[in-house]
Amino acid sequence: MRYFVIGDEDTVLGFQLAGVEGKVAGNPEEAERVFDEVLDNHDFGIVLITERVAELIRDRVDRFIFTQAFPLILEIPDRNGRLEGKPDLRQMVNRAIGINL
Image (cartoon, rainbow, N blue to C red; front, side, top):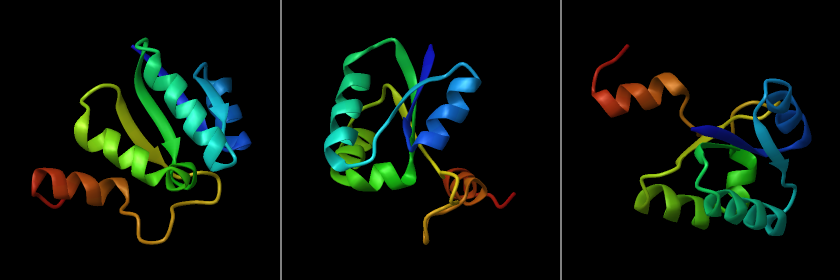
């Protein structure tokens, strides 16, 4: 199972230094194109997408997350931090398991 990252230049570069493939997307058209390319390649099991890029194609990301089981799509903050109103990892885990950690 391979990882892929979609995001801004800094995020993609950082993950590439760790051996993760990725592409930069700076506008909705690029984000749609890269998202489609990744979904068409069944070698990728986990797709990391920055929250800001995911917002550019929110309908597509949500539609895929709520209707498909594979690959796993994870939204991550970029170098500027979390978007306002987004839960952090601890909050998401607490909600998922129903226990406060």
